[in-house]
Length: 408
Image 1: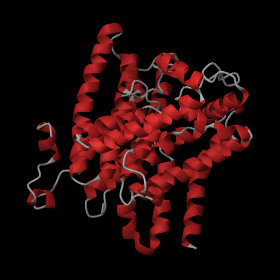
Image 2 (image 1 turned 120 degrees about the horizontal axis):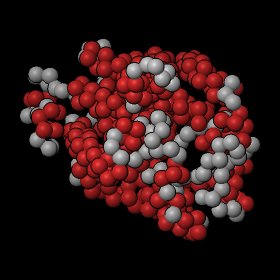
Image 3 (image 1 turned 180 degrees about the horizontal axis):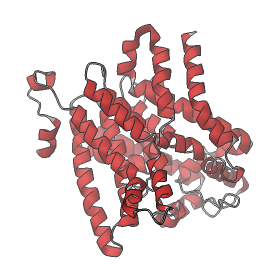
Image 4 (image 1 turned 180 degrees about the vertical axis):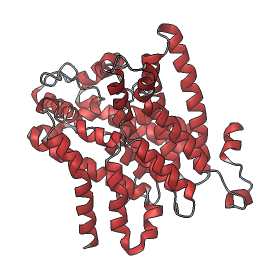
């Protein structure tokens, strides 16, 4: 009965988002990204070139993912598009709930017999986060990629993942979308050679499998489509909330802009990967995942709003195991939740539409998620600071600030 109630609460929490984007949304903008995935499956069945095909007007969107992702999209081609939109939305809600379950288990288990209801109440606000909301709007794949990474590294691992070596699921996610490859860098920084090798091998096997089945398509992607940034859409648009997107909108152009981007990315990566290493040594895989995921969003050339699905993991990492005893954790998690629920970049667009208003507040709001990503890293460092007399102090482990500063 308790699990039935939990499912009902989650369904009710998801209903405003689902109704907005599945019932009241304009049909010419309906589930446009899952339409791209489905079209890739149709292309395989009909023999048309995957990377030349476009979805129907007015969107005219190309398929931008590796060939392995096109192969996985094949089942969607057998299902009517209207059904696919609803099914994909339901699966995103389930995937987000699973992320909360695996990444938030340490706080959820304290609920005892009320665990199902606690899971539902913790999942509900996650579905209203702007990145999650945006993923449902477009019919995106990010929820499943984040879930794969969480299932790979967080203990206890689900039965589905226990027989796989660590890194295998991240490698599969990398074969679907290249951005999870940032975890390879993290594994190398933390000298986890086996996990790094497994991730690369898993991605390589999936990629080679796709190349055997779709040789021409694979050649086109790796030699042509991958190098065409225009396929991703307007990189300088508000929806690109990466550091590069921010600089394309406000920073210098040309070579100076590129150099500035590389310098800023290097600083963020330096801090982020060392903070993630600190979380790994502290035995906190949820915080470790949260840091690496946010770093990926910031340093990637293109990070659409829905790429920040990692904020779900950030909130759970900030909560820790007993946030009611460490109130700073509770306030930090609440701050991130509210910040990423407000849809601030679109507030910025509305502000800038008023030509007689001062421009700078609109620009600040327009780039809010970039600032929010940095805020997540700062808060993850802040809440992880050990208190005097803690286990880390007794073991002689330095504070996050000390270890980051020392290049740990």
